[in-house]
Image (tube, rainbow, N blue to C red):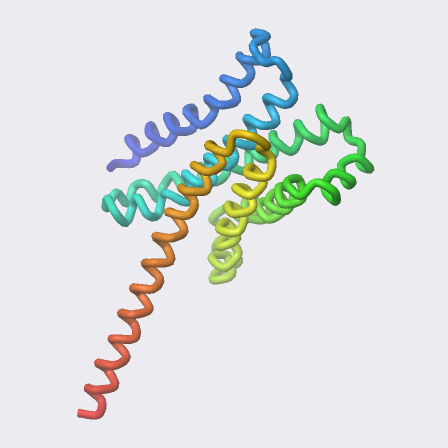
Amino acid sequence: MNTRTLGYLKALIFVACLFPIARDAWIVLSGQAINPIEFITRSMGTWTLTFLLITLAITPLRRLTGWTVLQKFRRMLGLFAFFYVVLHFTTYIWLDKFFDLHAILKDIYKRPFITVGFAAFLLLTPLAATSTDAMMRRLKRNWGRLHKLVYPIAILGVLHYWWLVKKDLTQPEIYAGVLVVLLGVRLVWKWQAGRRDASAEVVAAAASRG
């Protein structure tokens, strides 16, 4: 894929990633939302989790399909996850709590789903802050270690959603199932790589003795 085509594709995906906020704005402004603040807060949170899972799906899809171009979109999708979590958090502290710090801290302390959600937000922030090429060069190997936080972040995000929903758990269960698959595939690959390394060591040891 040439640079021009890749640029057009990135622009198209960028616009598509803005669809959720445009859709929510239309629903609220047209009066379709019964409780606009709750609707926006939940929708932004759901889209945060969606973009997190899409980002985690990039590597498995690339390895299974051989489409290396998918790697070009991972950073942008991850930053959109952060964009939507900022909107989710801002709606909560501004429109729901009106910047009442005491009420916010009380929620974080007493409501487990807010506690884990807030923890996920805090962990995601340094990932967004270090997403540039300059930070990758500066942090070197530590960059990769830092960005492995995306796994516990996704787990906390699913847990946040699961504990938030009080009745129909169908949607949280779907997100949890997708996350289990995405993490499970990585664990299988890691186990296979460990077996290959162990086999290589055995062969090397046998060759050295021979």
